[in-house]
Length: 307
Image (cartoon, rainbow, N blue to C red):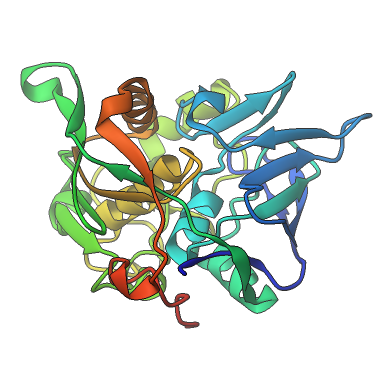
């Protein structure tokens, strides 16, 4: 049986929110089988649980925000991406503010935290959402067009293409395909950082966003070049970060997908629209388990290796 996974022990991190700039403490704890991933706002007078769900997403401006009973948590996508990459099914995330800490701007620190705690197999079958019919969402036309699509696939593969019309971005890879069966999430995707442009910073900060952003937790560019003294971690770091984000956004559906995802200029909003479209079409998906883990797609049977 291909089994569900949780943590062996709890682990903690402290950081600041990318957009809020607030100090926040994060405690990641094991959870029972079939719990899913649950964020818990422990700073409120009465703690509020926010179970991960595509329908719990209430804001997609520059990040994915989930809400429940008046409580919310911003910028969940990097932690969710790490959980997807490591195949974690069940987890409690205790948080002391309304935004997940940005740490170094990638998913690498979350991967380190989760792997340091250890990953434990549970006595329950891992439940996948298997896409059986293509689902697609589109927005805009001509030069503003963007789209995202899910298609049937025995495994999990993501293809993403960007188009930013910026010298520093254009000089790097514009399209990446990542297949869980042959690639390594920790090596190939997890270290890709979020990025932004100095020309947008003033606007974002006037809107209460990017208050905690800087060169230590993002790739920052002026009109011509990357300003970070250490340069890029990957030759195609920009598009790899978009895949990192997409993996986190898609894992908000609450189960690992068996599908091929492809996208052009997609973002948090369109990724969530894609999940909602999928959920609305009950003939387009089914729940799948594997009594014999040898029948599962490559890349899912073994927990991801450490660094």
